[in-house]
Image (cartoon, rainbow, N blue to C red):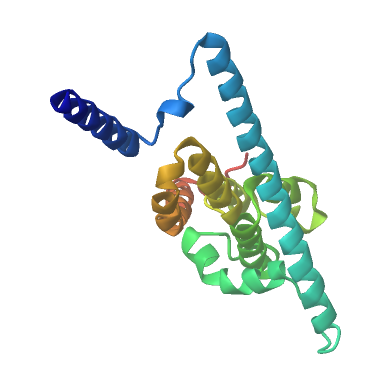
Length: 212
């Protein structure tokens, strides 16, 4: 009897160890196909909701910061002060290294490209592509500058994407949430470098007369 108890205890300990390694528990396993469909649907709904909430929070935070900067800028005679303007100057060297056209429109392409990069890093690629195609401020970009910027903006290297990554993977593997959060910043930097590398290669291959 005691031997059977020891065998049961060892089997239970082994099952607990395997569950800890795989991130699953006995209670979380579906009992049948319908149960699996229900669990998967609920998990997908939670992930989709968190993605929407994450994007909305990032955009709301960006709007709040822009409002505070504009309010403060009105006191120092810089009413157009915003995150976009600040990042436009901070990322000016990055735009220069990408090979943005320096002769078009008095060299303003560099600042405009840097502003677009800044928007992409703090918001997301959908917002910045909308600005690139609809905002008349960027309609004067040369064909070369526009082509390079299109490559530089195509990627998930932004804070919204990192937030979505952490939340989605935390739902899929709750036990690994801390590990995912620990490498989130590295993933952000890697994503940014990857897209900028693609844009740099495009700048090397595109001549001044190229257009999209």
